[in-house]
Image 1 (tube, rainbow, N blue to C red):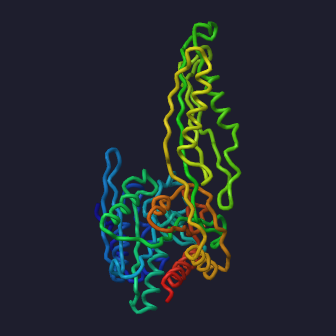
Image 2: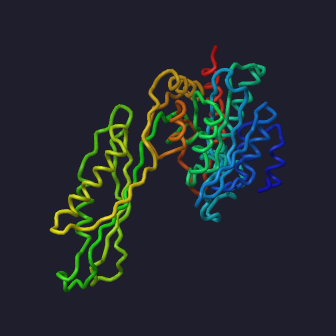
Image 3: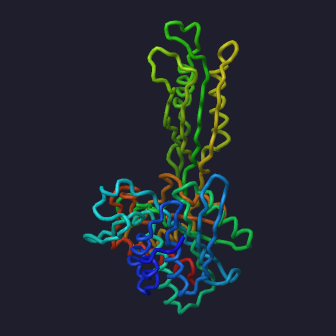
Length: 404
């Protein structure tokens, strides 16, 4: 897809190495998943003059949209360590555009706040990456025994199939190694510097269908109501405390997200009943252990009757839990946050998932970005001062990583 004229013109402006100006140029590319709409071109135009080698990587998979990704690297592989910044230029839909104070892709600044879809999640953080790298390399006059890379996907807000996971596989096949990574997801609840992520919980979804026999409620002996069995299963699952958490993770949590029988009539016993649940779990649990427990609960309830009751169970892994153990890398990031914001960040593992779940299999990874109060909302925005301070944090992390 061609780069929109406004984005192409903006991307040639040297002033884009200012994080706020570059963030505006990125926001003006309406890159709703899986569309790119010029966002990666804006980044390439900002990175190439700094000496980055930029590679567009397009991946496909049956039943999913093709996705464009960007891997940009400064320096030669094998010469020192490779520090990676990772993020995504795709954004969620804007919703009701009329509800926005300003056009969602206008990137307007009002009262010190940059408005636009992606301002918080996470185009501003990507702009902060670039500005940090530019200042860092300028201070060293381009001399560095190592590599700096940016791994940018257009698939994080979507299926996450043709994005970061495949870029990482491609790099491994090419023999290219990442030694550490910072993901720029919005991690702070209220103020910049409050929180960084050093891990994430796992996610497991269970889809349970219990079958019975449809019939008239006045003749229950001629029918078989599946609802009581489904409720017994859910009660057994919800009634167990999975664990009490540990030093880095809160307790694992099971939530029932839907129950449905598809039955609009009040005088019909339904033929089947369905439920969906999701477990966000910590490192005290394993995917296989949870799956086995769920299946045993279904079998125990449905096997109580003489001939047994039929059920179907579909189990889907969304993410595995991981933890980047506190050590020199985590400490360096925390020190950079404190130096740039004046706040000592909480080392957290809360929240949903991110592409860090893929990166952790290749190198140590932490997450630090902007305040997430408005991400995915109408009037998404980020404080201009925070964007600049975030860039200072990233520059400080580079200094610490490549110290000496």
